[in-house]
Length: 171
Ligand SMILES: [Zn+2]
Picture 1 (cartoon, protein in one colour):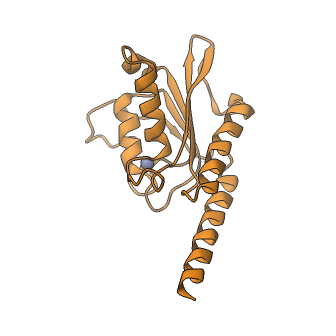
Picture 2: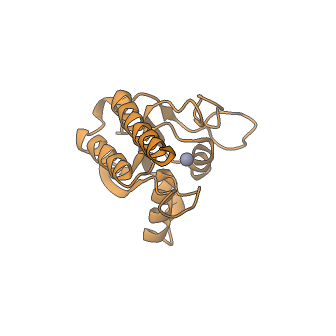
């Protein structure tokens, strides 16, 4: 049985938002991600991550990329196979870069919360998930599978904090 939206474990969703909240506390754009190995009725969290672009001063360090690195390090000899048996939960629609990467790795499915109108690669800006010009299996992306409103609230908090900091500096 494959993981579907209806039986997404609430604990898994919660841990995804906990990751996003960690990012917010560190002054990062609050996005959280969990990778769940889902194979033959067995499920296991194999990576959890949040956006760390400011902390590591690296634009590549999105939550999804952090999780991908963790899986590669954890399963050095079989990560290609592991990715194909993995379901990805993200609080926000993956950006174009991450969506392309997840498609290349052929993860089983991507469940996300809010749509990402500025950078979204699963339909909001580009359809990296299904574009036929990309010669690999389409990526199954399910929008609104996690609480999109909660995801947006976190983003709002982040931008409010950022604006407060900016106005403090400019005074
Ligand atoms: Zn990304």
